[in-house]
Structures are given as C-alpha cells and as structure tokens.
Length: 206
Image (cartoon, rainbow, N blue to C red; front, side, top):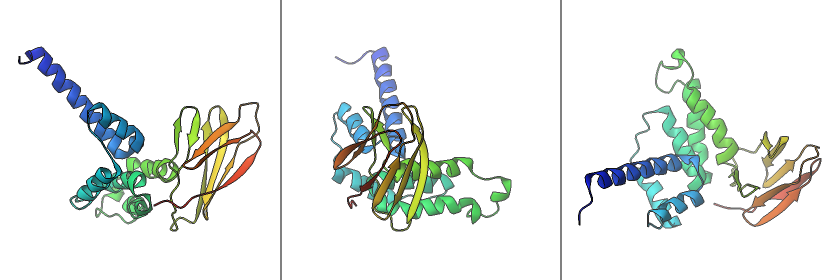
C-alpha cells in the first residue's frame, strides 16, 4: 500500500534532514565514530575501506574553487588520513597572504577560513574530542609541525595546556579544587590531577 502524501512528505523531510546532518558531519564536525553511528541508523555500514575510497573519489574530482575548500579537505583528511592534512592547512593559511584568488585580499581577510584553520589545528590534528566525561586525544605524527601548544577550558578547568611535539604530548592542568581530568589516547587512559603535568609518549599512527 503506497504512503499517503503526508507520510511521503514526512519521509522526504526526514531524509533531507539526515542527509544535511551527514554533510555537516562529513565536513569535520564529528568524529568517524559518530559518523559511523549515523550510517548505522540508516542501515548502512561505513568501514575504513569505504571511508578511504570516498575520500579518494572526491580528492580526484574537487576543483578547489573556494578558499574554504582547502579547509574542508584538511578537516576530512585530519579525520581519515591525518598525515596528509598539512598540505591543505598550508593552502588555507596562505589564502590571504598569497592572495591566491588574485586581488580579493584587499577586500578583507576570509574569517571563516582563518578561524577554521585554528579549529583544525586545535581539534582536527590533535583528535581532540569530549565523550563520556573524558578528553580524547589522538594526534597523528606530523613532522612538518615540529611543536605547538594551546590552552583550553575543560570541565571548569581554565587554562588546561597541551603541548605536542617529537612524538610526545605534555598536558598541564592548573591548580584548582576541581576533579582530575581523564585523558584517553587510543591505547590507554590516564588521569591528571589539578596542579600536575604529565608527558605521554605517542604511538605512531597513519
């Protein structure tokens, strides 16, 4: 029995919303784990091989006509093939400095691309994610970026500092009366008390 017009419209609306959500996730707003969960809801399986084939498919067909293209591709590769993301980060950062579109820099800097590159370095390249009360980190080896650091606010802790470089991650939690912070790497989980620092040796990952 065919669906009524109302039911059909509802299905189309639900499908459009789901596809829009997938598009946002694919642009780097969620982790591969979350994206796989969404595909599971739709009745599909998203394994690593499918992920990589999809990335290859679009990499070979994208014209990169916008400065945001490098940012989006950097985000995707930060999730799927992070050691290749640096090329696109450089392109995004050079968009205004090099005036890659020929004369548009004089009209103003591209705030979306600039803010996006900061977010990409802070979250994309570190694998930073918060789930179930734990701060997850999964930074890839990135020889081009020898060392960098930044601070975040997390669970009421102001100025939690992360410093990455030379296969190590140093995390410092400022003194406070707050609870310890649980840090999860792909192969282990540690707890860092306020006022303490820890140095974690990173496992090489592609």
